[in-house]
Image 1 (cartoon, rainbow, N blue to C red):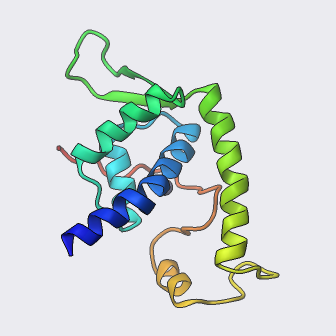
Image 2 (cartoon, rainbow, N blue to C red):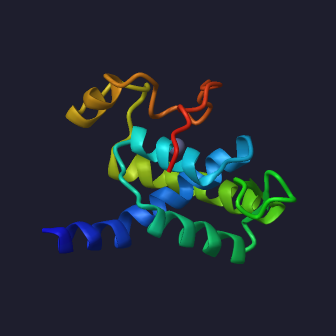
Length: 145
Ligand SMILES: [Zn+2]
């Protein structure tokens, strides 16, 4: 079962996580701990051993750049921002996610008009999962690693 879970993570969820990261890094600088917490709110459990290599790869792709929050301290928090290339990647992803969503989840004339069990479950959470413009100004609580 763990094997299947890992295959699902690798083959499917990894892309979702990258999209979350692109999206959030487009709004403000983000850091590993924050991303892990954000993904946890979506029900994803991503380990540091997965997250940090992922962030490294995204940097190597040229989508993110990072720097230490305290330049004098190599152990300080690393903040990631979206590059111009990351921004155009995100724009492409948005179009394609939209198309994918319409095809796979369904074309509904109005938002929320087709209430699927998934949709209902999601709406019980504290924030709207589906809005691209999340008005979430507050970051998840910082927790020590
Ligand atoms: Zn997110």
